[in-house]
Length: 153
View 1 (cartoon, rainbow, N blue to C red):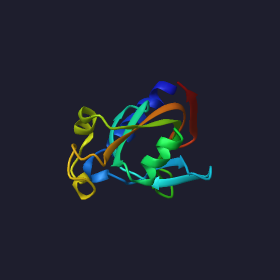
View 2 (view 1 turned 90 degrees about the vertical axis):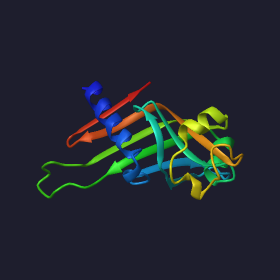
View 3 (view 1 turned 45 degrees about the vertical axis):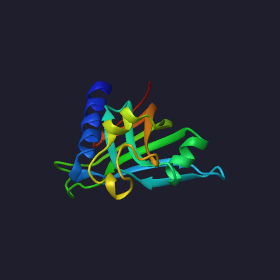
View 4 (view 1 turned 60 degrees about the vertical axis):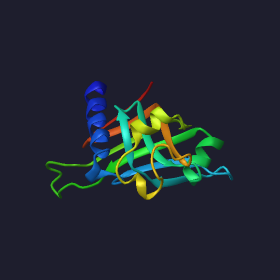
């Protein structure tokens, strides 16, 4: 059953990286300089199933600064829409816990660049532009009503 839930979660995550879904129902939690978790809504640039997710931001953002200071992170992808009879539910909650790194090599930056980033950076060559690469260590998936799947990589 884990393989089916993981595949469904991967498809949900992939759908969140589409242009019309960017930023909807995706949260990234990082540790701040006082040791407290902080959560921000984010847009997924690209994903590799539930194993790895990338986000784009700027080097001077709090997200990048926090990721450089502490690589522990969590990502939550969620949607709580369902009808009152719990039929044809779209409800899911995908919580991933792992590590995050700030990536600044030009090849990765070019690969992850997407329309909309020009509001924040001039282009992939912009030195202030960076990619946050999240790697999952453990997961908690609720992709079907009534069933919760947990696991580790």
